[in-house]
Length: 114
Image (cartoon, rainbow, N blue to C red; front, side, top):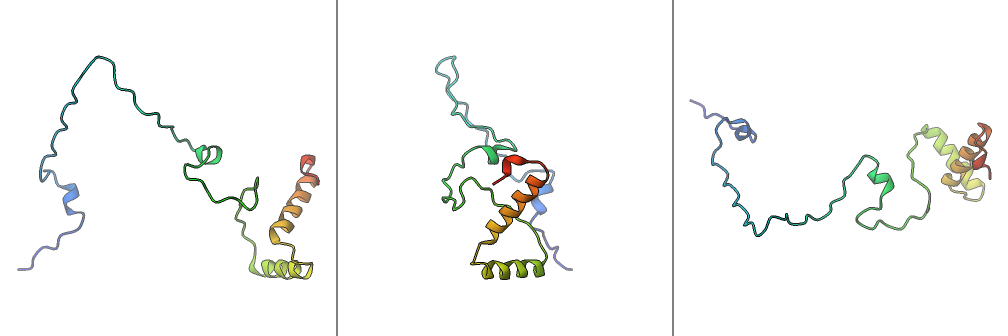
């Protein structure tokens, strides 16, 4: 007879618990006023965008600018890098920002005009 192989998750779905958890001891009551709870800010979906991080982040090399990941074809990226080097090493981020500004101004968003 073969021994039954047990799963790492086997005990999770048992109907009977292996050992009952000890009940927490009741806290002594000194007076009727509840103890003050430390203020814990609630997180929202926008909390990451609007509030300062709890751990100080590395200082940004581009203050006021948000990093964005864009996908472009590999051959287009290669050509852009080559032109960047030929035109004095202007970073692709600078080229991209300039082109996006031009696009927005053409669409009527004049506040982005240089």
